[in-house]
Image (tube, rainbow, N blue to C red; front, top):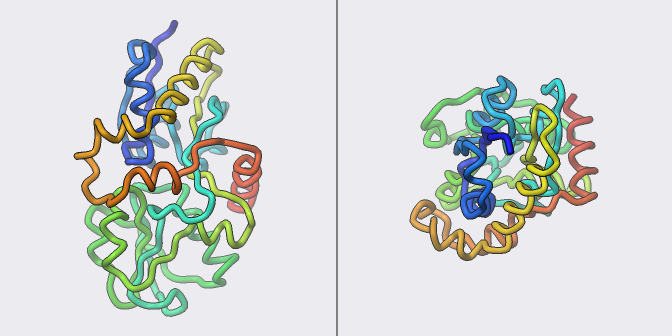
Length: 247
């Protein structure tokens, strides 16, 4: 079996995937890199890795994208870790800081502002530490584990996945497992089995990694009831609709 380079999101929501891969014999046949979503995207686009858990907005940018797994990072309604934070109601927001770690969530926010709220604020591409600058009529999109610490800090919190579901009646897919070339079927089968085993052992995965995510009050609730991992037919419909709307 060829050795593949694999980039995976380093957030709590990917812990079951990482655990499954680490516990599989497949770990000896891959080089595993832990990155935040926009870096996963860049590495796959630039050909630095062969396979990555990438923001779905990356898919149209690849010459030959292959979705190689029936698992994803998705949500059926609220997700708690992709939110717009503000000290004023959304109709009063004048500017929004965009999380530098995000790709899909940035496009989702822009889409919702246009089609759901019918608003046109100023967007600011942010850097490290931007989440501490939310005040007055300046809001920010914050994704991933940093959001756990934000939920008690601001009066107005807009969960983008929940609003997408309210608007469309569909779940949302934030990231999918994508390769930029055809991989062997044997590798794909083994890879998916490792992911499946990780999802069957969420409690074990959390027990090994609990100290890494101190801001999440109930990681079991988050992984089992907020994140939806199956890339089922409704999520595929949602992916197609979202990509069609933003292209």
